[in-house]
Length: 248
Image (cartoon, rainbow, N blue to C red):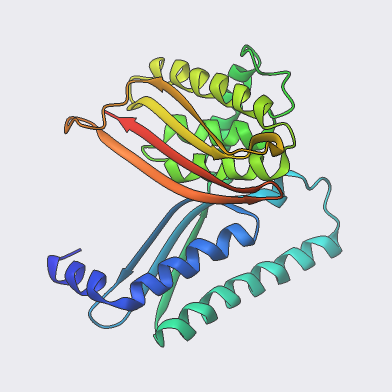
């Protein structure tokens, strides 16, 4: 995109409105968001690109004809609500929305990761399921994923009652991630750092716990750091989730 469009995009307050709307819209609709990219041309055309994992698709079994019709109607309503929301915020007449389901993109690679997880130390954990394996496959085969990892951690913190068990699983999960990455010369990730803060297991005092695996050089210009932070609202209060991914 030309430099003139970049200046126009980030000086325009409408960009922040659209970015915040899309960022909060997808998690509320049971999506794990990987990437949100928004561009606006000088002609007023808004382009939104979202990569996500759709969570309800992991729990659906056999679909009947009536259910398939309902799913198509829900998807059409979802797209119309998203476009109408962006149009109301910006007043734009031309809006282009592109959504990519990572489950379909990484379906073949997920089978390889699923076979590798059978030899891991955490395969019998209650937190090891299809969603965690898909998150692992996306982290191994993509060049960014701090947001997806943070959204996955937020999902487990909300649904889990034993936070300490999940943190021990997460540490083994990240160690196994680096083991898989070392076997692939095309993968660029060399280190992961996760910082969690809040009232773990409903404790009276808030604490901070850090998981650091691999090499994390925050003061070096030789590596690319993918960073994302998000709050997590649970019945025990608000948790802070921060994720750093270090790439070559």
